[in-house]
Length: 231
Ligand code: DX5
Ligand code: ZN
Image (cartoon, rainbow, N blue to C red; front, side):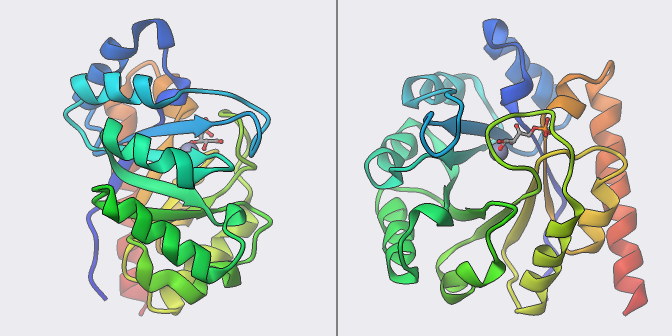
């Protein structure tokens, strides 16, 4: 199975929104590989965040690819708008797709609007079986390790089974973990097969984002190597 480079994606949900351009630069200077953008509609999750015009403004100043996480009930209508706004990775939640066939259609719909990488996400209480029938249609699986809606929550370790399960099923795309990631929780995710790591409060709240991000990358690398050697 191919080994993907480790990707660290600071979540701008935890940044100072009054200074968003500077915060984007700060994350990039700290070594961000992707910028994670949390889109919430006040319906799929009990919180409202940002829409296409703000993503478009971020895309204008960002050099790193935008990893846009749609926590919204209607990705069919709004997905294309986020694609146009500059999403490089565009991820929908499987809970809003009634059937695997619908999920496939949605992935194709995103691609038809120019999305480079299509992702599917699943909530902590959604079984892995929901995404298995259409894994060939996506480039990324975003495993939620907190219930979506807010930053700064505690990591739920039970979801690591899903990450490992994806690799056992031969999925060789990106496996991204999101929620409660920090120096304590990242090694377990990397050992379970994650290559992409979202972090909001632990990175934007760090006194030195650059050294914290470098430490996260190193912890992931070491944990992943340990896993390779075990085999
Ligand atoms: C939660 C979001 C996460 C969140 C992560 O709904 O999807 O991306 O910003 O924040 P931390 O790292 O603070 O848990
Ligand atoms: Zn997210």
